[in-house]
Length: 170
Image 1 (cartoon, one colour):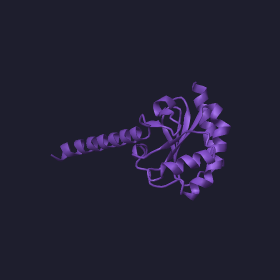
Image 2 (cartoon, one colour; image 1 turned 30 degrees about the vertical axis):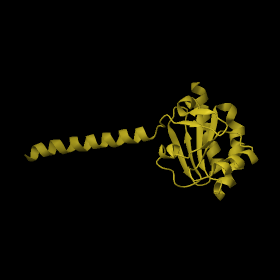
Image 3 (cartoon, one colour; image 1 turned 120 degrees about the horizontal axis):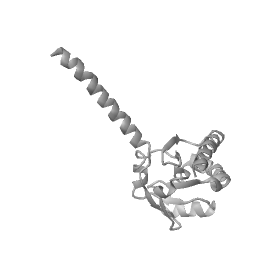
């Protein structure tokens, strides 16, 4: 009986490890998420395959979000011609009228999406804090989740490397 247990236990442990690795691989890839921007643009994450993109969860009452927005605009404008996209997703509790005013007043150059039904944040383990930014590579793999303000020098270095890889494959 002990011999049988000695053989079965490593097999069970192996299966558990395979399961854990499989789950972590699945969680690191973005599902197809369909969104509509405040300007009416239909966005699907499946259509972003081939591009590097950042999903930035933010709110109009979030000081860190407001502080990082000019740098986010600058980074977007600098790299948008190199297959980089930004999608700014406002939190479900943010009144749509405030989001629209904020986007208009600051002339946000990237798509802004309302997440009123919380479907987008639920795809990313129920985002709770703002700002939270998720960097996704050209294959749809989550590369980095940044909770709090983005350190743009560090982020831009990482972005350049990802864009180089992405553009080498296109």
